[in-house]
Length: 87
Image: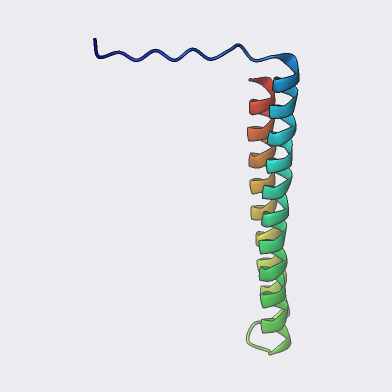
């Protein structure tokens, strides 16, 4: 006696499609959030360049690095979404 059994019905095709749709929406929301962070950081770098606290070369390097990090995170989100779709 210490076991509790709960039976769940098998997933239907409609339910699976709904889950995939939800995963895609969450993935898109994550990508939008990542892009918003990128935009905010780019604005800070441009403001620092305008205020002459960093040089134009440094600004370009920082912006390139921000873009690389953004691309990596977006690829990771895509990988997770693809993996969940296949499940």
